[in-house]
Length: 171
Image (cartoon, rainbow, N blue to C red):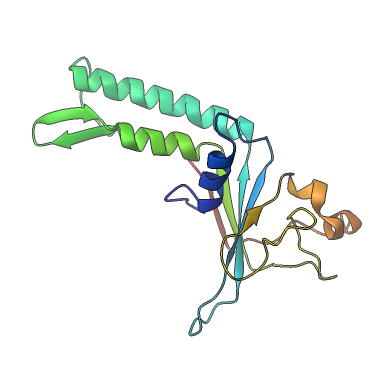
């Protein structure tokens, strides 16, 4: 799924761990309850961070910002570059958009309606976490899905990963 803004759980983790990188494979869990008049079921959003995905994304951002800086300096033609801010005839590099893109680098969102495994245990949060409560964003797990999923490990040979309605890698 496309992530328009930095998710609450990610921003909270960064506030609690200033200066640290998000561990590879870290999964943030956010419940998305259905409203009283909604036709959809309660859903869960899983934000997964991968260091390799972040490395590739940051490399692309660096290239795009360098091209934007060349275009602003007049050394290259202004083409389609999302980091160029045009205000009339004034060109500048959009540093706010660059910072947002860097914050989202490495994250990928998955939306699913699977809140629990068939045996009633949550599929990905760490033991003791209350992140499946439907009253709002309340936590994140500290390990990749396979490491903390008791029901997934028991069914690893016969089941597939949870089905998602939509997912899209973050540019």
